[in-house]
Image (cartoon, rainbow, N blue to C red; front, top):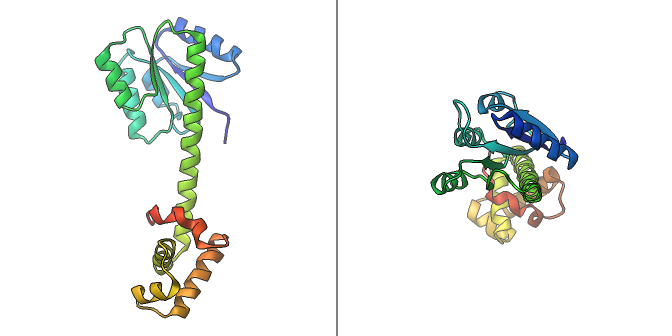
Length: 201
């Protein structure tokens, strides 16, 4: 995984410069954009990090940018920074998934704390996503019958019960179980319990 980036999206050059100075000296990798369009077209949403997003900008407002990130499935947490905060807009931003809504000028220590929390949220989301993809790839290696056996085994059914429920022989159930273990590389089916909630590709 590449190092996370703090993406600053603000149409005020002075704000971009001051935030870049603060974040650079705090050890963060920073990239700045002067408007939402430039940010969204820069191939950024799939990269690790978080976004410091101005509320009022050009054609695409901060809320618009946040909505587009959500539609694209981006895992980037959004921290709004604005001089024009109001309760309805704050509620809308939080409901849209923003992790924070801070009013300019923001206290540097508070901002750094919020950025750290956002980056940790992003790391966790990426890890969950990787785990989900790995699960789906593993399910893709299994036959539909092996998946049925797996679900029943994890639900606590013995081999004889699985055989009865699926209308197959006890020996066939044992064969499917051995195939599942061989494909997954684990020692027992309980270690695959998380797969029973995954959908087949």
